[in-house]
Image (spheres, one colour):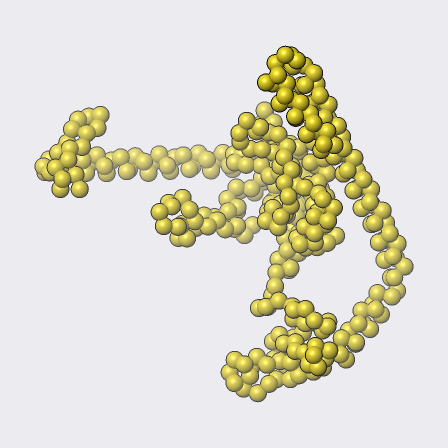
Length: 350
């Protein structure tokens, strides 16, 4: 392009005319050498980064609930309320056995998720955010909470790059067997490694194994009934204005135009299954009731401790705002008015 429009190119060594053979040859040679040097530099930097990661010293970002000491060591967050909420999330998942159940509990009891501000003038301060499915999923899948140091857990696929955005793309989580570095017991943990593996297996089992999802209705096994003849999922249909349900296997008919496999009324199947469930649970009904009562009392105590810690935090922030207001010169109204508003906001929060 420069040769076409008679434009000169200059650098620290001189000025070149790309329309002449000698200058164009020299520019190509220098460009080839610079590309080779750039490749060698990137390769050396990557190997150095990988070697540091193999030693467990490359810290690219800590999950919520952890802080980095000045010595470079990873430690639990010194805030007791932060630790309590993080442990509560894992305890709830063991009891609810689903991310949506954990989210509903946190929302129903007005429990926010803690994090440290990572940039800006308030960097390092604790902030509280609304719980959401993505955050809970990342917490439950992060091996750092089991005390493990991991490098190479995610893979960047540049083939899904957006037009005009060279750094875009999609990041995938590799299987644990493909992680580049894994050091267990590298730092303090919220859960043990066995609990982490059990959580991964449970979340994998929670994914739908079949196309579609169960729909609402009176049928007990809607979306779960499997045909005993062909092994495919049976469809739930309703007659008599939704009062009569029926399980039918119609895959062969709807896909290939063949005959229907089989069909059965849902009422006798649901009645038989209900009786089997009650029969299996009846011997341990008393033990289950006692365990439920114990769990409720433990949950009530955990909620009481959580609100107590929140009240302690509000008392501290109110006292801090009051000390700042009393320390300012009363004649400096420009600053005093701001500190007064901060004090009133802290008292309103309390």
